[in-house]
Image 1: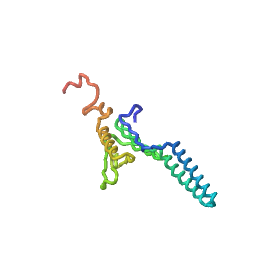
Image 2 (image 1 turned 90 degrees about the horizontal axis):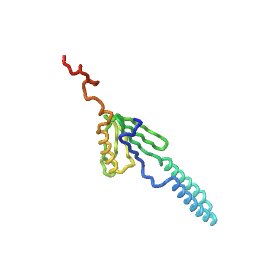
Image 3 (image 1 turned 45 degrees about the vertical axis):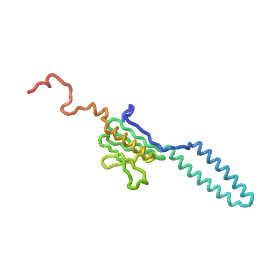
Image 4 (image 1 turned 30 degrees about the horizontal axis):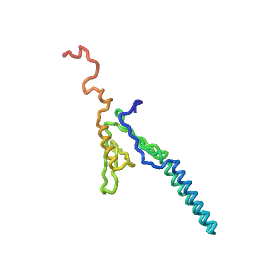
Amino acid sequence: MSESRPEFRVVIHPNRSFSGRSMACVFCLYVLISVGIAAGFALDGAWPVAPFVGLEALVILAVLACVMRHASDREILVVDGDRMEIVQITGRDEHRVALQRYWARIRLEKQVDDWYPTRLLVGSHGRWVEIGSVLTDDERTSLSKRLNSVLRAQPAIWADQPRGGVAGPKSDDSAKCG
């Protein structure tokens, strides 16, 4: 990829309405309410409720930790010059795929049953990568059309290439025949 601004760049990430701070506030509120209820039961003699409240809080904390680990999941698509790069970041893992722009193809697969969402695939030479799984069907269709138009557009690197024949400076000798 070149150091300058790429021709096309898109970042895909899931819709996240909860920040880390919001989750912490909700969890603390849940713990306060649960401990209050458990204390009430314990004072009435039903003390075995307390360990289950603690266990429930640990399970909820584990689920929220898993959600937060994937809070920065995203996919980055970059088309620049004669290359296309796909970077998929999931949790702590990063997966990169680089494709030659000329050979890259976009495939929008509709499922047999309308119940399931479409799949947007990018690939070449039998190697396909699914992108945009967090998008709606309409967003995937729109991205597919946009990627197709970007990939079909002639990049600046190809515009400078000669169209055939011998490249080089023209001189008076090259105009003479035999």
